[in-house]
Image 1: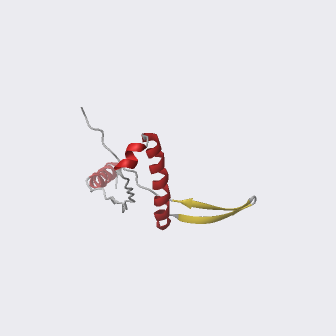
Image 2 (image 1 turned 30 degrees about the vertical axis):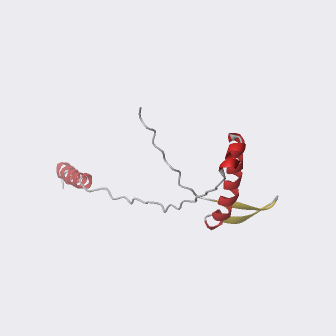
Image 3 (image 1 turned 60 degrees about the vertical axis):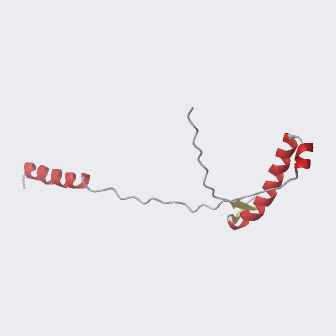
Length: 102
């Protein structure tokens, strides 16, 4: 087979590769929503400042959500020369919000 024939052969193989569809896997992660609700009376809300309510809501939400995170967290113990330590890992899927155009 001479060089011209080889060039034609490999050009044909190359063009066949270009026309093949690209295969890829789309992975959709399972999303669990951790939800928190807190009810307050109207009288309580009228007496409190916005800063106090925000602080209280953040603290209460963090406590309640931390209790439900145990089924999503993965803990490992690592041994090192300076001592043993435990690491925790939680994988999350960020919520993407779209900005509204004016």
